[in-house]
Amino acid sequence: MNELLLFMLGIAGVFSVPCSGALLALGTMIDRYPTDYEKERIHSLASPIESTRIAVVLFWVLFLSGTWAVLQQDRVLMITGVTMIFATVLFLFIALAFSFAVLYSLKRRRDDIVTIEREVAIETARVQLEKTAGVKVPSPVAPKAKPVRRIPSTVIETLLRQY
Image (tube, rainbow, N blue to C red; front, side, top):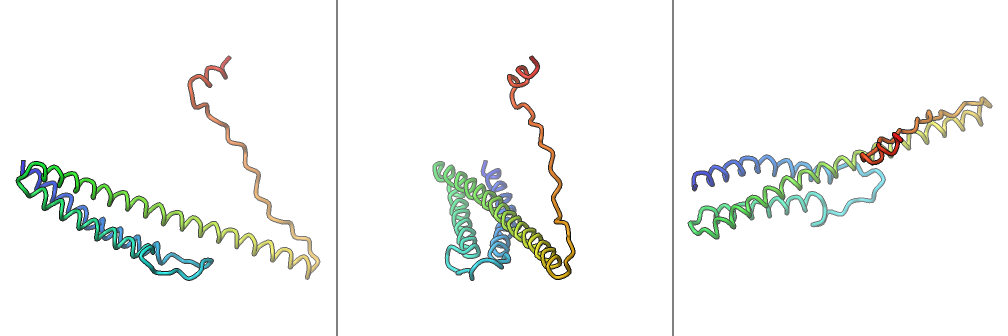
């Protein structure tokens, strides 16, 4: 039984080290993401870099205390340690998933802003050309999208549509 717990501790530790590094790297990337349209960021404990560092330090403190509890011979401490290690590793994976989601949403917002800027620049150039040269330039119109056919989500809807 103890060998299995020690093997679990080793596997959890091996996976936790690169995940901690990845989480720190994601926190740095999120904090340094281009902020052309935002005010200067204030670096406090709530900034992405600092909060990620605090989370990683808290993770390792809880992980090591869980490891200590697993290595004790008391059954209650052993169960507490296994639960604590499982919870902290789960916390680490969830933090990674949310960090990727935040980074993706920042990238998507930035892409939307760049697309709008490009469209505004094209429209401004078109209007300026019409004013200065007197040439009528057609505005680029986006093609109309076909309406998406809604697929019935339930069996009852399918049966009702058949009759």
